[in-house]
Image (tube, rainbow, N blue to C red):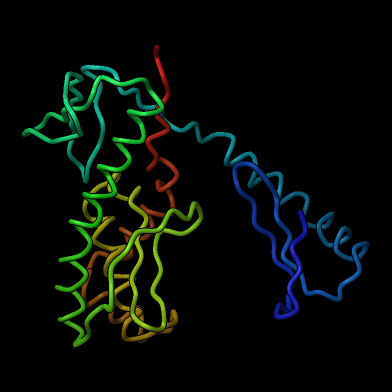
Length: 220
């Protein structure tokens, strides 16, 4: 797939689990782009092989199965419940067909994400002398978070399926953009102030983030 942009001045490749996307300036002839891709064939095949080795874990939503939440393990208990609620280490869920139940569970994770990121964002931002304009969620599959020029922070709720250190790093990363809307040395200094272990947490997100997905499959 080729995606052109009049604002782009360089050629770049993005390989995902499902496709290969070539980002290119608007005026570059297609034969030149295809030749450029051919020279990158070895790298593309290596990247695709890397994704092929990653088999996502599929959770089920049956009674007694488990789901992760910020390093904790919650056991699902299906029953005559109207909504998804947590009781200690148990997650009580309605006894619904899979598609409907999955929607309820994802909605519950979104609520937990807002409850987690909103106060933490304000806490970390205050340490930098800033305050977010708003805290929202994003459904973007290729981005874990973002910060707008107006100070709106967005987080991907799926990061709650990973460990708490990674989620805190993500928050520190986006909050630091309230001071530096770039990835300069000053930006990373702010991140380090808020999250001293950011290097290892960032590496873990990059290496393991593909696992942070419910991928819930029906068993009945």
